Length: 164
Image 1 (tube, one colour):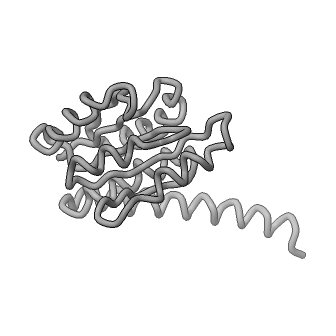
Image 2: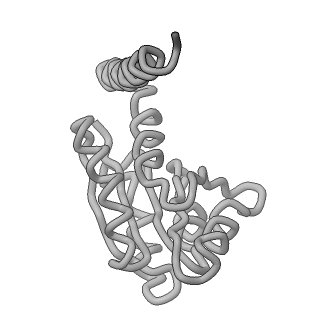
């Protein structure tokens, strides 16, 4: 199975990124986590990106706040799918990171999830890997069924309490 690479611009992004890690663990998807800054360590970003495919990665997740150029820098150097997680910071509550991540020029796509949306980034990565992995696709379907069952149980409880 291909790995998921998670790159964050700062270790302060780790509390958000851990949600992606936890989700990948649930699906037994291999991953690596790194701290590389698009602005402070551009050579390392470029090297990681250039070697990602040959090192067995299938999807890359980039988490960054403020200027949030990390996902774009990564996407510019690979044809692997890149998923951006805009990180909420004290500046503009993450709106700046969201816009920097989602507003990519034509030809360099970055799939972008919600501000601090690490769980969805990981699930999207799993879905991408599941295109070629039937067992992983089955596990995704089972996870969705479990989520639906939880909602239906909550609905039943509410209906019993409030509907005469």
